[in-house]
Image (cartoon, rainbow, N blue to C red; front, side, top):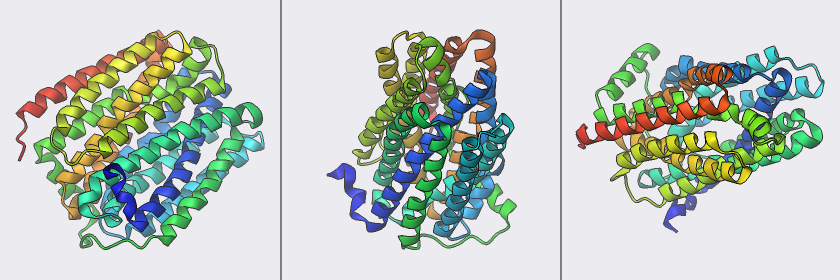
Length: 399
């Protein structure tokens, strides 16, 4: 099948399998963490503050992570970042299982994981070109998004079940164990060399990467769209515990199903991207998907039943996957191998780096106006971002 053509590469199969196990654990931890924060504080604002603590390091350090990814062995860098992620999950598990965890511990460990991700994500995104043929790169990106969101279906559903029976600490412990799979797969991979290493000073390297992206209108428009969607739309998931408990009158399992529905929609979106042969028309698809994501959020904010909420979460997952994975594919098709790590660090920075400010914004809005109104406002803002991108796409040169 054309949609699965990257699996012909041994190293991609190893990478995919290890990442799937690890990402399942990661989604378990993320679901359990927001539930733990809400259980300890019953505060929408603290949910937003936790998101801020976990994502602001990406804004601070992602550019350095991209420069490092272009000047060192990416596989070795990933081995280090995954080992530190294992340590972070272990600390969170020990504190929670011992009954000593405090909100200050969660905030500090969220900041630690965000710092790790600032170096991990640019290296992981740019590493794909070293384990598949260049012409299969768009397919590999889409399949990588499929694994992230397949795990997003499995992880939250398992987390909801585990939280009900054994508590949040069990999720954190299993996430720590899941990193053993990705460490083994990375150790077994033998990537092909893809580009000359960069040896210029880090700040000069970062400056050149910023200039490279800023001078390219199509890159610039795509990055600005992702920044807007990340700032206004993506933090909605921090309020899912509020919807699960106060709107839908459920518990941790309801939260798990909401997150899993988003993952199901995102998998469908990623598979539709994997079937694409090229990037023709991709920019228009990205803009329309941003509008659709905003519309889905607006409708979800009014949902009063679990079936309607699950259907709308799936639609949101499908739409936002086209925005995020579509932009990733577009950027990697436009950039050169020597600049790939830095361009991916910019993508990482605008995707994850805007999230902390959006977390504070939506947390404060939910405290002032209520969670449904906050999510409705987020949806309207995303629709505006998509409409802007569609207008900018018509004006940008296609060469």
